Image (tube, rainbow, N blue to C red; front, side, top):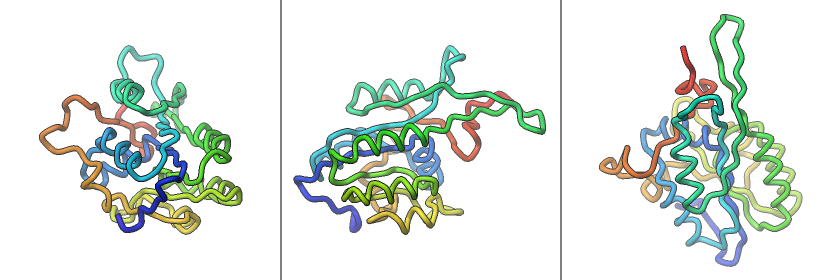
Length: 203
């Protein structure tokens, strides 16, 4: 964890782009243990809040993301959701959009004055200006994603803007679920931002 540096009295908050983190971990072939992830950061500094962002299909009786959202909600995370939007693309294929960038950005800006250090789990280059804005308020920003996948999941402009970049594989041993525990107890997040929530698309 060479680039994961905190001061014990720092006020920190996690902002997790759920679908982006899922896609990143999947590209690295491991599952996130969210209990271990939260515990690791609680040991590093003063945890103020851990936000998890994801969109949900409200018109279905069952969403594969719902069990994870419910689990996180009862286990120390602040869940931010919104309904997805459905549309048909030029080829006639049904597509579902669930972008949470605005919700995440608003929460970061609202919380910035009460934090010393923000940890952003996303590789989305659209967040570069957000990172720059909170840095002007004197807040340090650590971005966690990966350059080990092909292609890399982290946008170069976001990586350069952050005060520090943590390669997800560097902390994998601390936050990954053992193979023996997969598909048990803690649900998995099945959203893929690169496919517009492809696992939820009805072909």
